[in-house]
Length: 426
Image (tube, rainbow, N blue to C red; front, side, top):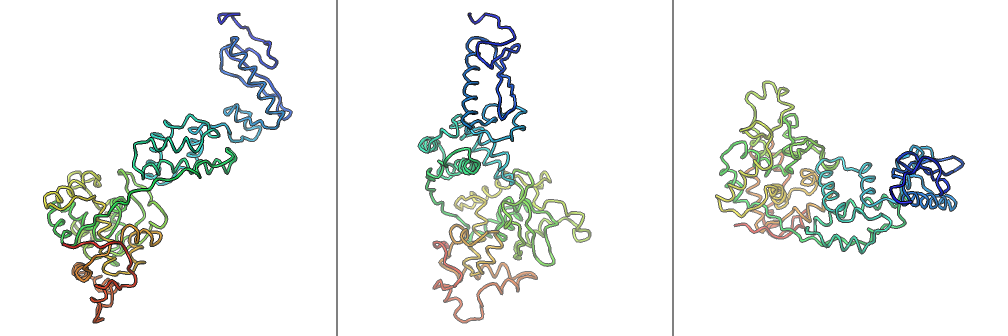
């Protein structure tokens, strides 16, 4: 018979294979139950032979006690009857989709970033390979071929590592090949905090008050960009000079903080309080509840919360006009940490302010020691003693009544400090 031969409903020469209209049905027994499954293939000599071979493989797996209904018919109603076992012959793409459904990060920005690595790199690169067939050497060769930084390559491997770990725990694969895939060594980026003589110079040069207040608050609070943009007036306790951090704003989408330890209460140094007063709504204290749900840092041109691009323009323009070396606006966070470290504020207090889980981030990334700590202490004191909370914060520094406090600082004897390389002051 040729391909144009009309196949009619009924039995075929392959036992258990029947023609049903424009489809093929196979018939077998599993765990004492008769099972009929329809294959969406138009009957002809080739497809009938394929169906016969498939049925033969199914019967072999059943006899060897290796049959998994989901492997063959993942969308069948019979899957529920036989327990809904996980499909074991998944491709990498199918496995990632399975893992993502249960393990998608709750934090919006983290989920969006990870999903980008999955859809833009993993699936197009190795997504069509069966999970059980993928080799360590294939992953290593593929990841090396990507035109990404070492950091981005490591981030791309993260969902793959997590998925394989889960697949192993569910017995979808015999071993975790990702354990042998090496991470890339990231080039350590030098942080570029503002020097103390640049701080007020930069702030004074930003003429748009709302933008000036934004950066003044950022430098003297140490908040991340998302945390600061997510602040509402209800979060500020002017009486106690404190702020509650409980949300972030990422791409103008309100979300939770990255981790539970990032939910915290921080102290406000007086420069950050002054920044808030610059943009405080008229007659705010007559009825504070009226403004509770409003975001604090807003673009005066739109009255909407600042978009990152818009607020960054003021920063970049000021740096250029002042001929200060360019750095990201995020360096305000590093500036705060370095000032506090050099002024010998307690490590635990700085960690709490910045929302770090432990001291590692402070010592490894953020804390830079200044070669002229006396100058830094005087600068910080000058900027923080003003205001109702000034005396409280002075107590957090070294006991300035000790006659040798300056000498101790110069010799780097502050017990709580053992960080980073010097920050050269001009």
